[in-house]
Amino acid sequence: MSDENNVIGQVHEQDMIRVTDVTKNYSLGSGEVEVLHGINMSVKKGEFVSIMGQSGSGKTTLMNLIGMLDSPTDGSISINGTEITGRSQKELVQMRRKTAGFIFQQFHLIPSLTAYENVALPLVFAGEKDEGAVAKAMEKVGLHHRMHHRPSEMSGGEQQRVAIARAVVMQPQILLADEPTGALDAVTGAKIMSLLKSLAGEMTVIMVTHNRELADHSDRIIELQDGYVKISI
Amino acid sequence: MHLHSFVLKDLFRRKTKLMVAVLGVVVAAAAIVAVITTFSVAEESFHEATNKFGANVVVRPAIESIPLVDGYSTMGSLYAGNNYIDESDIQKIYTIRDNASLSVVAPRLYGIAELEGSSVVVMGIDPEQERNLKPWWMVRGHWLTDEDTEVPEALLGSDIAVPLGLTEGSMISLSRENISIDVRVAGVIESTGDNEDGYVILPLATSQYLLSQEGKVSSLEVRALCNACPVEEMSQQIEGVLPGIEARAMSQIVQNEMAIVDHTRSSAMAVSIITLLVSTLTVASTMLASINEKMKEIGIMRAIGASDIQIVSMLFFEGALIGAVGGFIGFFVGTLASFIAAPMLVSETPDPMWNILLPVVGVCIFTGMLASLVPAKRALGIDPAEVLRSV
Ligand SMILES: Nc1ncnc2c1ncn2[C@@H]1O[C@H](COP(=O)(O)OP(=O)(O)OP(=O)(O)O)[C@@H](O)[C@H]1O
Ligand SMILES: [Mg+2]
Image 1 (cartoon, rainbow over the protein chains, first blue to last red):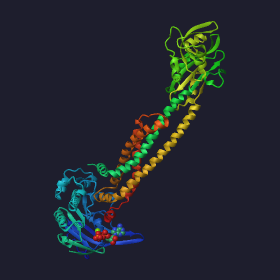
Image 2: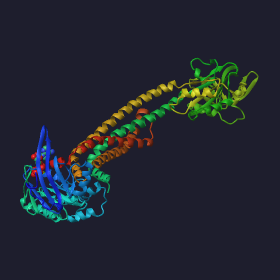
Image 3: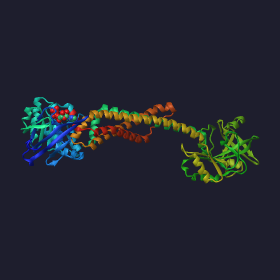
Image 4: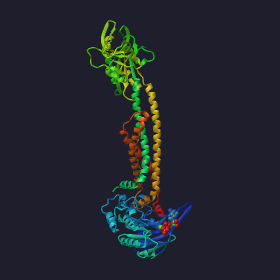
């Protein structure tokens, strides 16, 4: 496999993310199933990339690999020039704290904690004090007045904005959003979309979506099909 | 903000879950506290009762002695010849290694004197020591005084006083050979069914004068202070410091009864420990149940930067906290239970045993952490990628 097949990153020095010949196998009972069959792609610093593809095409799997939640079976991934494959769990945790912020379709806030506490959690895990970072993140998503509400007291859109605040509070280099608007209505989804767009530039944003219209707002669309990169516009 | 303050917030916002887990610990802790409290008060009252068995160690000259009364050989024997213990040697008993356990050392001098034309047994005593030894004696009148009285005083056994119609204040005359003394009756001991019913009891010095045994005593009755003193060993120690005497431990009965109490207590303790194990399982299963609902949260926490150590530490902290709260509440519930149970079971009202509060809470904290082991192991097996995908 080479870049000739999947022509993506041309200006290598600026590559924030480089995925080279990545395969991912899952062991399934008796045998193994290969979900990703040699992915090559790269994303530039500050770029806003959408990943599209049918259900089961491996989008979430790829996101988890880039976000260091999972390790590839083969191939390599480097972030900002640093190889992340073949590292220990401990190193991955530390890199993940600084590097990747996650947003999920189902928001995944901790229900027993307030918005403020949810957003502060990454700081706590990283052993950092909150010196205004939480307030700043909440301001970024326009929810600084809802700091002490619990998720159950907020609308879906608001919860997703809290989740975005939590994802950016550590000022990560990459924001990984897996179907961030999937559980929201069109209007709210569009608002979240423009929020993500406003964050791009400041950080690299990769968003999985099934919505072509939303994807068109991004700088580039990568389409996966059955574990391959089909097109990259 | 600290990691553990999140656990606190999380716990207190899920009150039902917290209560179920805590309740398991409360039950176990309460059972243990109730057993310990009830049995310690039972033991205390038992020891008060067993004091009636008399001295724990009887010290006598190491010679053949003629029992005064068949059967009750412990209460007094008549010694032939000049075989006595020097009164000045008594202090040596306090030099034994276990001297801290000595509570009463009561000297006795026995002899025969004439009262109203018939022979009676005279027993000389140290009033203060003897009173500690025989707290159950019911004296009509007053106890012998320590100070020298102008006219010597005597306590009479009921078998002597009643036939002669003697009561407090009566004057009697005791004689032996060519010695004769007038004595005022201080009081009459109500019948105990024991040897003293037939005794004339005098202060030691008065009896020594009457019996011409100045500075001598026939025997010593020694009571150990503690409940489970090594009386056999103490007997040997006493023989070591007082050559030519024989010290006999009289604790067999007490020890047998103690063995019964001990046995009952260990059975109750076993029940409590089983309760504790069950509560560990309760807490573990509560936590395990909550980990199922928490799997997702642990996955999220991993995704946003929690390390394995942090996840495990949160779980252990949660377990320890449940244990601490449960142990603390359990202590009071158990104490309350023993307040209700002890009067019915052992006719005694216990005091709260504050000294076991910390150990009980400690054991419960340990239990809670033990219960966190399973969930912690489970949590470590959680693949965040998989968890987040499936929800
Ligand atoms: N832990 C696993 N074990 C086995 N197979 C898995 C596992 N996780 C994912 N898969 C399989 O890998 C394939 C890709 O899954 P993935 O979740 O990446 O798809 P996706 O593109 O995100 O789909 P969707 O749009 O539905 O979210 C699927 O066929 C899925 O069944
Ligand atoms: Mg997916």
